Amino acid sequence: MMRVGFVYDARAEYLAEGYDPLDVAEFDEQVTIDGIAEALARQGCEVTRIGRGRNLARRLAAGERWDLVFSIAEGLRGRAREAQAPALCEMFDQPYAFSDPLTMAATLDKAAAKRLARDQGVPTAPFAVLRSAGDAAAVDLPFPLFVKPLAEGTGKGCALASLVADRAALAAAAGALIDRFAQPALAETYLPGREFTVGILGNGDAARAIGVLEIMVRPEAGDPIYSFENKELSEERVAYRLADDPEALAAAEVALAAFHALECRDAARVDIRSDAEGRPQFLEVNPIAGLNPVHSDLPMIAQMAGHDFDWLIGQILAAACDRLGLARPARRAAA
Image (tube, rainbow, N blue to C red):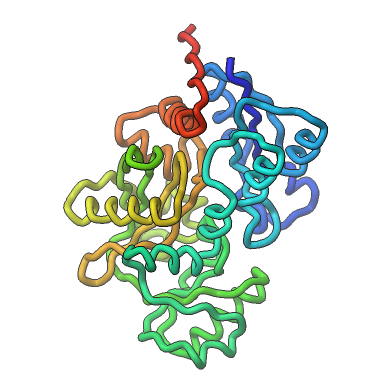
């Protein structure tokens, strides 16, 4: 039986310690942690629940090892926080699933990810990084622009105020984000077209898009932005559908190109939005996509494509095992 060390940030634990809910918004609820652990067990794994990255550090330093570490830990501080768990694994020669520390760090920094993708021919909207509100004076991009934190996920910092029509609004929006999140802001040319997120599994030539999810914020949401608040209340505020028309298929091609350009591994979810001419543009990639069995985008893509949650976890596990030269675990027979 494959021994798997499961690393995660439990949102409830951090809230109990007094952290701000927005600061730990990307962390996982117990239903997600239980769902993944149980799915791994059904794949034939003996799962050790390790918890946060500091727990992993202590156990690795004490000499513990597993056949594979499966980490969905986001980390708490710094723009390289998603790289912390995989960096620990590499330090202690511990095999692990998902992308390496360089990819984890580069993809969390949206400007770095866009530069790397753009340099390899992946289409992405023009952008600028603002380190202070005063930097708005030097931004040489046509309005409207969309402004968001440089290194956050889950729609944090994205709201109606992020869509700015002039330099004064840009300065105000960037300044508010810089103050709130203690990091630079990213301003990019606003893309008014359709919004997609693409699920990708595998490695190298075997990597493939398993589906393209179109995201449509409902009018009753009151805010047309796919924001943190609208994601949290997505059942009431957001409509999703699996799309396979030519524009959606083009979005899948852009997403796969970004996956390869940023050297993602095993699984990822890539966000795409089209410009006014219907041309898909790369926004960002999440190399440890949310895995809430029913609420997160990647499991929704798998489900709409006809696959259950166990299949998704099994595919991620298989991709990691094949990449590392590990024997795939023998899936447990159904009771």
